[in-house]
Length: 359
Image (cartoon, rainbow, N blue to C red):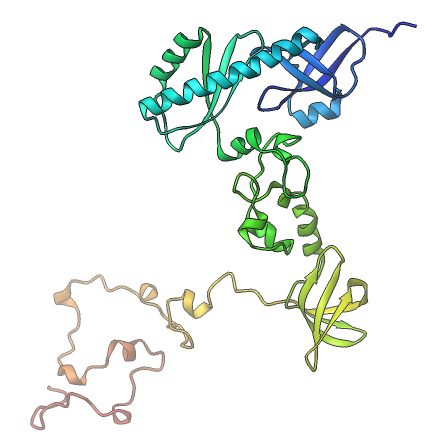
């Protein structure tokens, strides 16, 4: 019985950078997973591998609803032979471009080269820390290889995606298999999962933190929020103690009881949480906000709240007392009036023959 022919869309991985896309197959029998196919997309004819049938779930994962192109046919023996020739040509193109880069002394690192099936174009992938003017290089390469030249700048993680093979776990690196985007990874994620902080053990083939440190971070963060924090005081069947450590996946807590006893306790054995670790106040104390010093009450009548005398200076009442007999600004602002003169000796006494209050 002949296999029925149906119109179906498939998720296909294609290109040197292992791009994922949805391709339609019209007039072809159902394609199994792992089948080698020839697809036509935006860059021309390319070699691809079928991963699965397309569905709404795969479209959500790919983040696009439109199809990338068509599946032309299953790969045959002629396609296999052309692919081998393309690999040999790519090696020659890589060596030729590398020689011209050195001749022009360009500050760029050539990573890989890809030839689209049929020789429609050559795509060079390079890494550079600054902008490179390679217009003269492109003209020279197009003249030598008689094809269209395309230069693409990539990052250090994309370099590992092109060249890396296996990770420390023994599996093919994630960026070269299923990852579509390189998520940001921070040292905070490694600390929360209690991973070793040795850079040589938590760094991937690209020299950056491993992408897998992010896979379980959300689960750890959710467990951390549900459990009492480190520093909280809790009551259990053994007594009252302070939390000094957490085992997030096991949902257990290390509690220090009186007498320096440290016991690993299950979350269900905690009867109540007495208090959590104190946090820093979000606002400064009232005396600091009012401009006063710590431990000193603010001035009950601040300067900007006092009534302002708008009279001309010559019309204001004058204090004809000697300067030493006048109260200070602090004493003038006291609510109970100036301090008693007898309680504090005058630092600048007036002469004996000088009247204290002239008529």
